[in-house]
Amino acid sequence: MDEEHLLRRVARGDRAAFEELYRRTSPWLAVRLGRRCADQQIVAEVMQETYLAVWRAAGSFTGAGAGGTAVGWLWTIAARRLVDAFRRRAHHAEPPPAAAPHPVAPAAEEVALVATVGGDVGDALRCLAPELRDVLQAMVLDGMSVRETAVLLGLPEGTVKTRARRARTVMREALA
Image 1 (tube, rainbow, N blue to C red):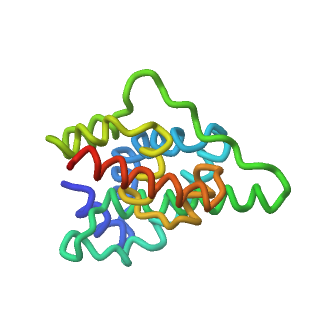
Image 2: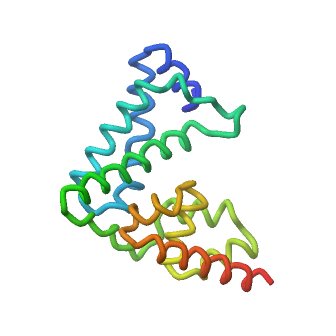
């Protein structure tokens, strides 16, 4: 049974389906959130808020027929909750924690990205500087706005726009 089917069962109030969805997706989601936030307390809070939102709103998932995936829908909820957590922290006059440092070994999502996007595009992505790749990943792959990306990465909006423009330029030159 795939995650989409589990979500449909969760929408009908099936606790066993919710537990299975959590078992399958929570390790991946915790790692992905941890790469964007060094504060494990915030990551734990975002995880809790995300799965509570999934339980409450599973019926609103439109499914693959509308072009979405269950895992993508889950990540969208989590990413927005993370941005909200950063905003709450900023509101309380505390700076948001810096994004987790990049590990020496490539992350699973980077490996998957390179495997999915092969050829010249994959080569161009691998050649991008990490700060450009982070902005590109947040805005293009995660579907975040400039403002959300700025909050998530702890950068001014102007810096996000500049890095996005530079990333597009570098990609265009690499593919020319």
